[in-house]
Length: 79
Image (cartoon, rainbow, N blue to C red):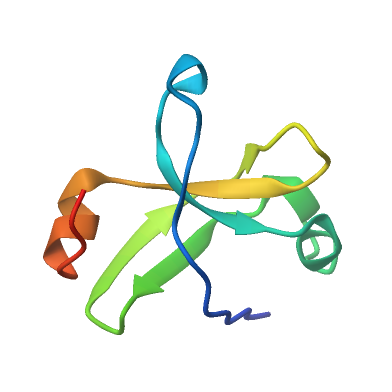
């Protein structure tokens, strides 16, 4: 199983695009996986919260994973 690990800031989409909190993943990382953009992930935040997730298109060729308010609050992030 291929894995990917990265530290980054949490982004937020514009309100007109849903206002979701997200983690951005560069396209060159995604295309290293066998199923490419159809890959499912097991994400871990702050080594405390683990959840399954899929990819969404960011619109600039890159991808993002949506972070729920519940998971953000579980790791102590203020919204």
